[in-house]
Image 1 (cartoon, rainbow, N blue to C red):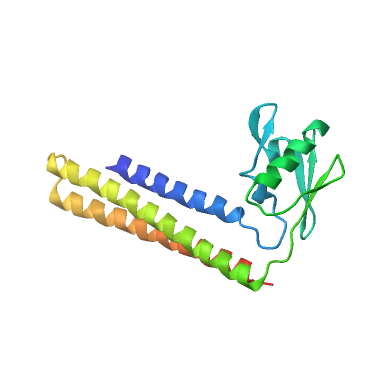
Image 2: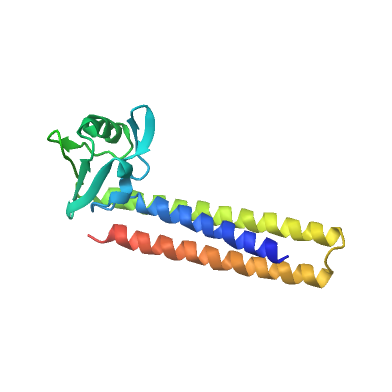
Amino acid sequence: MEQIFSKTQENMNKSLDVLSSDYLAIRAGRANPAVLDKIMVDYYGTPTPINQLAAVSVSEARVLVIQPWDASAVKEVEKAIQTSSLGINPQSDGKIIRLIFPQITEDHRRNLVKDIAKMSEETKIAIRSIRRDSIDKIKKMKKDSKITEDDMKQAEKHIQDLTDKFCKKADEMSVKKQKEIMEI
């Protein structure tokens, strides 16, 4: 049963990690190198993340500077950024690419807050699905007479406590990101 508990907790942690990385990719009007994490560049026929091709830094509050180590990759990095869902047009001088993040409007902020809440809800659904799978395994153990009725009830309570804890963490992460988005 301990194995079920540890696997449940591990999977719930992974769900929160995914939520955290998704939140990093949401731009809040400030330059954040994490917005580039999911953009892949076709580098000599191989999809490669930008942070493996270039030095990415924040030069000002709303400016990201991308300096590819291989000057021949500048055009490919530019193209990848333009075709991504980032919505920012890169400015290049042939060696360095600058991404200037515009101030986001109030309407856009409100839409981002809705997206953040939706992501949090999807994560909580994933956590509840993990709970369901774990409880099914425990019920199967009871059915196979490997554990007693009391052990089953105790295990279900433990898994429910884990679920509540991780759902609460998802809510806390959501509230924190929403506050970050709404501050001007």
